[in-house]
Image (cartoon, rainbow, N blue to C red; front, side):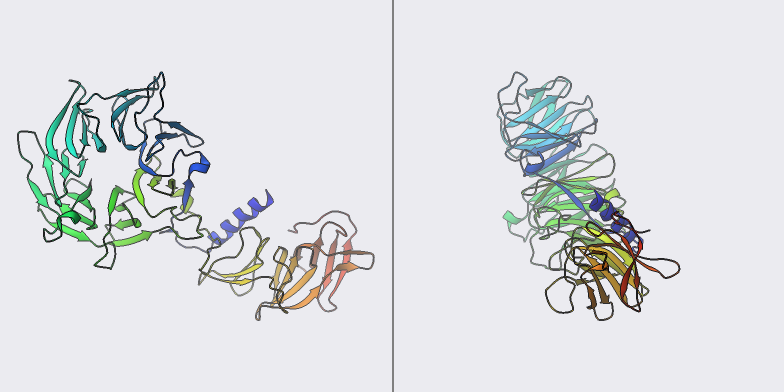
Length: 488
């Protein structure tokens, strides 16, 4: 519990040195070990009750209430089942019913009765896309052909349109993308679709497919492509603009999903991680999995997004399970060990003390001492290597900066004095105290207003001592068997 307290304290103190947290993205991961039924999450929905539903590729359907996961899979039950463990899409109608696209047809889930019902269709094909309009009409791609389900008539119609993706805009217009790199608005089965080309027709046909359509506003669509990255389309002018996601002109980026974040930021899910495009500043951020980083996205193959009712972002990945980003969690800048980068050493922060030059000295219980310079964001690590001049032990308890000296209390290694200019230990005292009471565990070091240096010890020989800087002696100032962990 004490370590948790110091970890939070460290974050709060370091936060004071940070002027802006813009651009910080910390992700929480939920995977099979946390109760998720399968790590390949390919569709996510938050229902009207606030529950998070996830469709997986092989594990069926999951529901998350913020604490625990509940799974629904293709097993015989008196309440029905989902018919297939490949879940491709989830939508909610105006009555609160969930419609679930699977590898073999569509199923309705009644959350009040907890019953699954199969939607009767001529053939139960792979459902790649499923959307619902404000009249509860279902529009979906079955076998990559456009279909409509009218709940009032209870009938499914094949609209005889081949498509690679579909989307509804705010006016409930249905947009269709195809494998030829074109999009168009579907109006009726009696009127042919007028297609507009999004991809240069010189591009090989097998590389032109449209994978995602997203309505940015009343006039613009954002278009994701199978291999041709990201584009915008102005509905009124017909102008198509490419939004380069990388400086490599030869890179092929597969866009799987698009969603609007906060303000004019757009999150783009790709096989190469997450891109965040800011329309106002025209800036782009690229978030990728990073080895050893517990707060990065867990996998670069990002399939789907869902923004919840608190502006949090849920991310489905193919190998890394469910990831969650919250703006609240990004308010405090985090400092943690990150292999291969200039970062803090150690996870268990015990002490933080300032010196007179704008630096913070941080003692950890697992990796020695760090000097942090807030103005540059740089760390210098000091740990136990066994070499002359280095600290003797990585578990640091007491810490105090005074002038050019850093007084250090390594765990069961007495008291050490580090020259902060050279980074070398200039004094070692294996035992603190006098002949009648000695201790090798310095747990706290404190300078009083009258410049008295107090040293608190713990366990055997626990007491409070004053340290004479001229004579370099420790004198008992309080006879007690108490254990001093902190002096304030």
